[in-house]
Length: 198
Image (cartoon, rainbow, N blue to C red; front, side, top):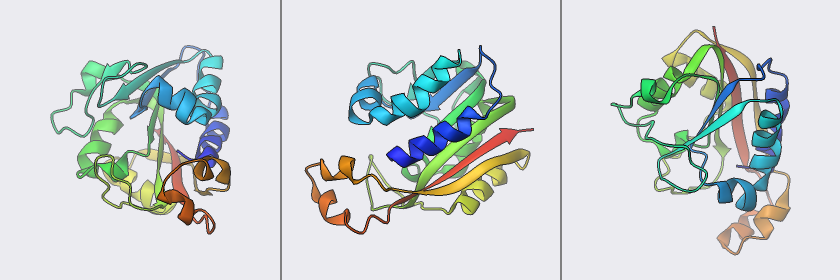
């Protein structure tokens, strides 16, 4: 997740009228080490402000790791949403480019959003291939991302959408990889959308 992407989410989520006892689900959240050390802006900009409002966050991932509350595969056609529950806010960030069946995944994610609940979705809009373990190169514009979500449920109302550029070079320059040679143009972008179930 880009720092700027987390800031976009922070700003848009801050305006939501979440109750103090709101239930929040973070799908594909990775480990607590990832959220607090490798990409600390996830904790700082997204999780901490949500918890400060009194909401409880449930972290879901495909792999069991410290900080993961529920191990589940939301891409599975047999996914049992009832076993996970429904939530006031569902975060689905940087997941859709790593699944071969987006329709099934989005349908499963949609089942986790409670009545009048919110769904925040982000996905790379312009970014190099990055297998985790696969990358389908799904790179929608914000408009296309909303269209793809609405194809599953036309009752989802758009609260906000946007394209966020990567402007903070510090994180990427500090990495020891071939990423360094991509940094000068820095044309990476993330497509973001926040929707509400009617």
